[in-house]
Length: 421
Image (tube, rainbow, N blue to C red; front, side):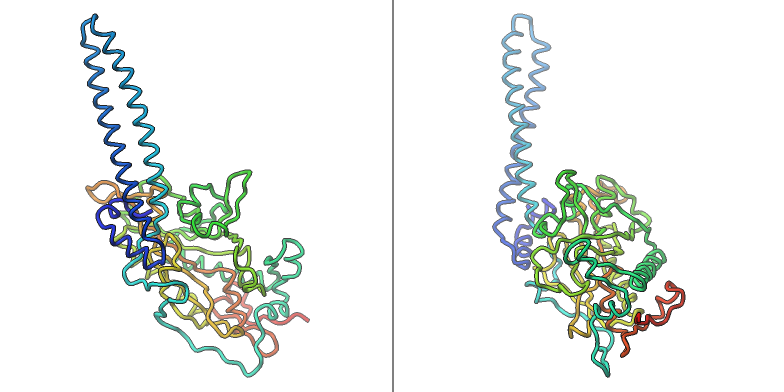
């Protein structure tokens, strides 16, 4: 949720952000009106309460023969106070609903437009070439007996799979490498719950435009998370944090679930776009002033991982219309997938400024000042989809795959994944 003070003091900035995102600007004026009505309702209630308190003292001090009339007036005043209190609740609810429809204010440098309007900031590595016809990741996975899509479909339906043998070991190795690097960088490792309450899912912004991609257990009124960003954002919900020692950093290892609504016919082959996967997600609570520097720090960690895995990639500045409601800026890193002849997203890292913290009421107390909302950031450090680029980039003519050196200690020294006869 955006800062209501910013809305009142600089509505044009909010409108510019909405325009950049391709979202309606009319909601800004609607929110201004709702906020004004809320404040007016509060003023009326407070005036009536003050009048009621003063009248109560008058009743207490009145002579006996005047009390009956004053008590009758007190009852009428009490009813008016009650009605004013209800009006405040209704006005606050309406203002909250309208304000919640305004997405986070984008940072100035973010490019305008939709998914195709990203800006490439840099590329790394040479596009891999082969003196043989390269196999895609699923064919390689089947040769290695590492991926079993058929039985995944038999057991759970389309877009489910089994990782087995070296496939399972490779994912464990990747995730373990990422976790160790996160710990070395000062992150606290976490294995969070993957079911969360509606207020946590809504607080992180995942029940907006993309709510149809979220799995819900209606009977329990719980949601399956699509990223551990969600439970980690809710971890300090309603708390005042001590950031005197610097940012609070967490690394959440979890299974993630996405319904992939609206993506039928896209990436149905293999494990690029699936309903369940594993991910190590970095999540940071910091001061708003330090958020942009922390954002670059997260991107740097992601790049070092991909470089050490020998992957070719590009870093893009995601356009405003593709940010999602919570992010003020987002960098994606896309790795080259040889058989597709294009870059595909492997990591995403977002600066959500104070947007999520306002919804979840996470604050800190600057020295000698009243509490303020923290900034939150998130970023992927490893996930199942990385296996796609790893297998395809490091494949050999006979269907074997070279293991990047950085992963070999996690695989008992295994240097090459060999096809299974």
